[in-house]
Every structure is written in C-alpha cells, then in structure tokens.
Length: 214
Image (tube, rainbow, N blue to C red):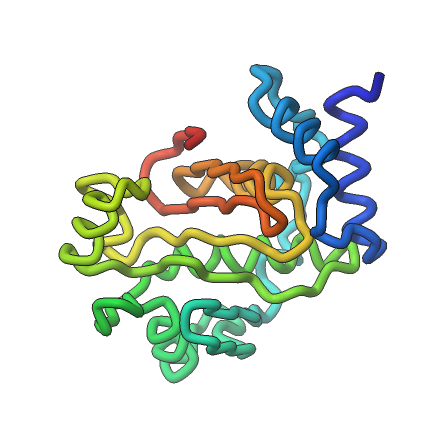
C-alpha cells in the first residue's frame, strides 16, 4: 500500500518530468481525495523552502502569470537589485484586478514575492508553467456576490485589500503547491480541493500565518 509520502513525492517528480497529464482516472481521483483529507501532514522535507540561500532571494524576479477569466498573460521582470519597476508592477496589478467588477487596486508587493518565489522554486525541478490567477483583488460587491452564491469568500477577505490571490499551476498537485507556499511563512494558506480534471486551487495571502482547508 503506497504511503502518503510516496504519493506526493511521485506526483512532484512526475510533474517535473512532464508525465503528469492532469487528466486523472476516477480511481486515482478517489485515492487522491482520500489522501488529501487525511489528518496526516505531508512530509515537510518535500517543501522546505527555508533551505534556500540568500542568492535565491536577491536574484532578478520575473513573473509569468495567466488569467483564465480574461485570457490575458504577462511575463515580465518586475524586480531587480532591490528595486521594483513601476511599469511592470502596474501591469501585474491590472492582471490581478477584479475582472467582474472591472476595477484594479494596488497589490501588496509581499504577495508578489510569494508568487514569484513559488515559480522560481518549482523551476528548480524543471517546471516552468505559468501561474494561474483565479482571483486577485476583489471589490466589496464582487466579494458579497460570491458569498451569496455559496462560493468560499470571507466577509473581511484580504482579497478586498489586494493582499490575497487564489492560484494554481497546471499539472501540479495542489497539495504540493500549497505546502510549498506554506513553507515560505509569508501569511495564510488555504487548500481548496476539488475532484475534477483541473483539480482545486490554493489561496495565499499576506495576513497572519495560518492554514485551513475548504
């Protein structure tokens, strides 16, 4: 019987090799669902970003983001030598706008650091897919509408302040993604599992360090 550690490690390695298609067989989905909701935590050594050295954090930062809701994609250098480029920052803020409410807001640079670090870390395994932004900034009206539709949205969500994003990376197991982000210790991490071919998503924010599953 394969252990939880074996399943997660195999998922990461298969993804890195380009063999994890994202089209999961029903039996695998059932197995993943059972594993995800287990009370056991994934082994921390698979996701330990704390082992990264200073060189990782001071190198130039490029974000590769895609917004499925609008079909937009940006890939740009936004930070170098301790300086954030305003034009690139504005483009990222626009991509993370409230697509439904058609409004944008300033996005917390710390959130961008988390998004960048996530991509840069998994690139070390040969995975260079764009990071999908499912939700970034939200207007109060959009947030309330989600609540009324029964979609997970906190009344005082950090999305309202430009301090949160819901994300996923195609063909990367969401638990691997979430545990990696949690290891950065930059804020809250929410795991949203969904039994579909595309899987669920991860909420990341720059609030207090905390973790939950939805």
